[in-house]
Amino acid sequence: ISALHMDPIGAAAGVGGAGGELAIAGSEDGTATVWRFISNAVCTLPLRPRLRLKGHRGMKINAVAVSSALHICLTVSALRCCVFSLSNGAVLSSISPQDNDFPGARG
Image 1 (cartoon, one colour):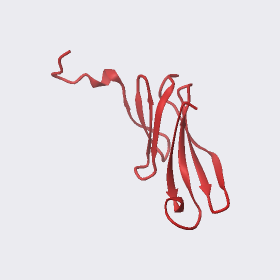
Image 2: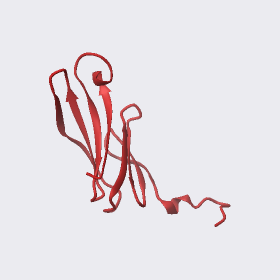
Image 3: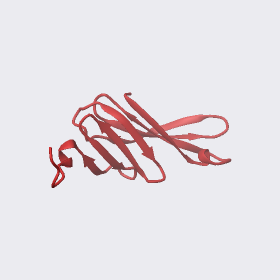
Image 4: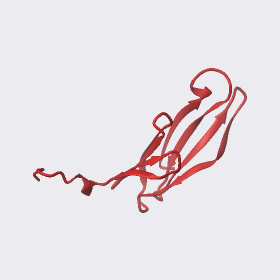
């Protein structure tokens, strides 16, 4: 694991009942995995991996973020930032340095 981020969901963010967390783990092989954990007063259990995300062409993932409120997660490597949907893992946006060639910019 090269990067990790967690976001509380459900009752874990409030009071009572079962809740949990979403977690995203980035790896050195350029992939990331989204997990869901359920928890109650007694224990916290991981469920199977929810999504397996690709898009960095084997470049190490340096940073990750997940937001259950926005229903997205992000992965960042040295050459790319990818925004994924938590619904199905689809790439919503991919930003690379070469994408930032703005008209009128001077070098």
